[in-house]
Image 1 (spheres, rainbow, N blue to C red):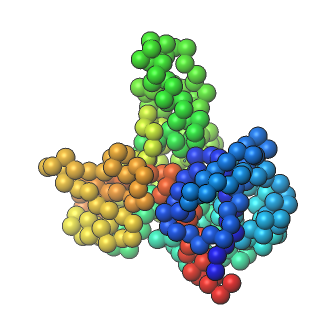
Image 2: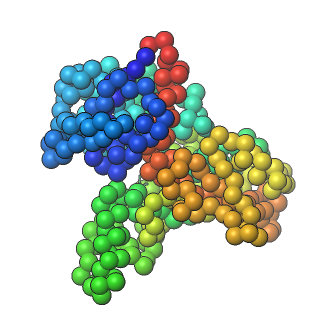
Image 3: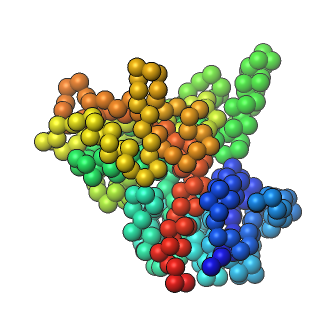
Length: 344
Ligand code: 2RA
């Protein structure tokens, strides 16, 4: 069977990537329905060498176009307002925003980690796609939890500007151009709290009552929901002047009786679906954004046992967050959903 697929936010950074990923995965498409705000309606997108006109997102767009699968990636307020119309029209919604993620009966899914949760979609018609920094982290936590049992995770992120969409990328590029033109002082600084060129900013999203940021608390709450476990997580999320691919320095504390064997850790990671180990420090080989960008793998390296505590391991994790952390995860959810609901 082939599906009518809507993409809400079709002209955004993730929306554009969704079309590329669907084409790469030869998604069973009957018709593509690109939806966006009135401002973008009328513009064109390309899918498999064919042009499609972007339609305005309206309450009736899903019904009129007989949409079966609706990817939402246009901000939480748009999902809040319009997801219900897609569900009412009989579509499954795969939502890339944070709006439904922590709703108890909405599954929050990374298909390699908790595919069984997809079955819960019937309760609301919605499947939530986790935050990008959470997705690539849980892809490396899951095999380690199966191996030794995780108690605690301490993570610092190095997040690319594309996490803030096209506006974030444009701002970094413009600021770099302005730097070389000796006019960085006058450059626009709207996408982030500070200048991002030649800087790092230890703030992503807004402050929470406990002094962590919203991005940091997403990494706590979403990790627990996906792993079905009250693993302790402490995150420090940092924006860095990288265009694409988030990096994460991760410290995992296992149950007290564990004596980490780095080779076992490496094997567990290597054998996990869509995780690749690059870990040869002597030859300067480790994951970096220039390695992961435009790929669908999560790369792990710099794996080392703690100097003091035998139950602690440290490693570095990098993935293209526009793909692995958003578009590809959404498409993988949809493919899994199709497989699980193949009688529909
Ligand atoms: C960021 N996590 O990198 C966000 C995007 N979802 O800003």
